[in-house]
Length: 240
Image 1 (spheres, rainbow, N blue to C red):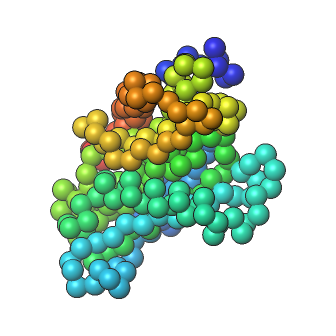
Image 2: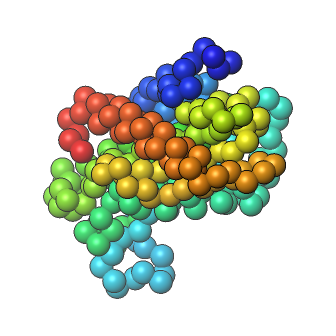
């Protein structure tokens, strides 16, 4: 039994609130256990200089922890630190898989992901909440006739997995994440194919067979996340 009473292959409680921010073109507040991330999408009528006159759009992401999202205060200066930059790149790469940039026109979608409370899995929560927010923003463009319906691609799901003493664990809370022998952050598309895999073995190498089992568990968890994303968006009349 895990510290919070879950089974090894069980997700934390997952809820996604739509449109918590009035002014953003798309927004979502995601809860994965005690981790909470606010995701907001802004649409700008321009693209980076290197993309001008290509007819293609762009999607980029920002990521930050609020100072008291963690057990002790995190200085705001952390926003420019390497870890935050690495996470925002992961979020951006993952969510670019969810939009047909060639159909977007010369628009930029910027996803701001702000961690309100951190208890493990903040980057995967940001990707999941970010997809929902992006879907809502792109839907506004579809409804206005600015982009075709095909611009919004099917959902992606992100989840963490870990291994402790040969036991595989899905959706790690912080207390587990700091104590596992190996952990992965995995992003999977609607077909079950892998978009991103980040992983580290702590202390000693992990056999290929165990890695394959971790990826299988991650794919299972990501499918459950995608199901929730579809249900939440469906309640808003958005079919993905």
